[in-house]
Length: 205
Image (cartoon, rainbow, N blue to C red; front, side):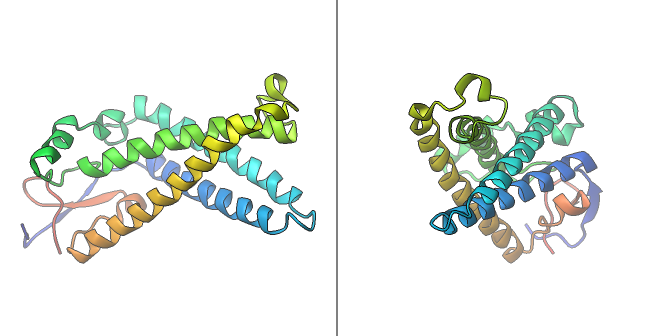
């Protein structure tokens, strides 16, 4: 429903927004370093890129840790409860699309939860690969140099990489869709503000 007036409301706190962009930049760095490492693999120049890839993985792990903790102790819009909407998800079986709301969108929340689970998988398997392939990282004492375990970590790590790319495409596509509908949502993780109507729904225009 198109509204004639919208009120900008501060919803997302600075730490949540900072963590969001920290995770984004960490993932961009991880993608870039992994692709550059594979590109220069034949010439033997891949080592430095894998080193930066590992450092980027530590950055991602730090960002995920902050996000998990802030989801437990942060303000309402940062809490995990703000991402949990089982009744709205159940409505999809009846082809009922949930209303836009203050805070995290009910449908987007489902994707976000899946995203954080994939990131956790990527961090865990990445630490395993750092130990088995490069003898470094916090798991090195357990798995350092155990190349026989490489596939145990590598296959789910590569599967997670593909899922991350799919999520990025879905996320950017959803932002474009909201923009096409006239819904002002893209700025939320920059300014922290959502544009809401009198009923607390995302406003158009």
